[in-house]
Structure formats: C-alpha cells, structure tokens
Length: 147
Image (tube, rainbow, N blue to C red; front, side, top):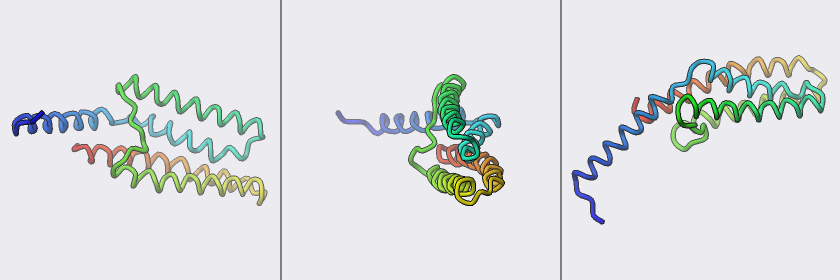
C-alpha cells in the first residue's frame, strides 16, 4: 500500500487535531489535583496509624485510585496515565522520588526516631507538592500536545 502526499498530509492533520482535542479535554478541575494530592498525603501519613489502620489506608488509597480513574473516564471519556512517555516524565520522576523520600522519612520518624510530628510535617509538605506536581504535569501535557 502506498500513500500519496495528500493522504499523508491529511493523516498528519488528523493526528494533530486528535492531539489537540486530547489536550483540551485533559484539563482537570482543581478538585482532581486535590484528590491526587490527598491520596499521596494519606500514604505519607499512614505510618502514624496502627497496623490495621495502615491496611485500611492502603485499601482506601486503592479504592480512591479506582474512583479517580472512573471519574476521569466518565468526565473526559478517557483516563490519561500519568506515567506516559514524553516530557511529562520530567515532572513525574522527581515528584515520585520526592513522595518516596517523604514516605521513608515519615516511616523512620514514627518507627525508629519516635518523632510522630515529623510524619505530620512530611504530610504537610506532600499535599502542596503533589498538588503543584499535578498542575505542572497537566501544563506540560497540554504544551506537549500543542495547546
């Protein structure tokens, strides 16, 4: 099968339009950024809970993830994976490392250092960091797709 110059141009134009539409619908309301930040914050705070409480928090976080995905699909028609390839990884990788570091410090603070207030401080850092990271991810995503 050979493609003519006009067919190739039309295909590229259709791809560009599809990317722009995806970027347009990929705009999240503030509550969506807050939901992501709250889920991450709950994980960082989880060492403060009892063993049963930590399992309950983990179950709630997993359920929240499913609900966020379902909400995105219902609201937008799609769920856009945050770990997609492209420039958005330059936002996700440092954010993931920061949250992991905050979780490790929170865990050490509770179990080894016996300083539960450090865990609360880590959570207080996690929420705004994840909110900001989510907003930045959205901006990079939209810019990458042409908006």
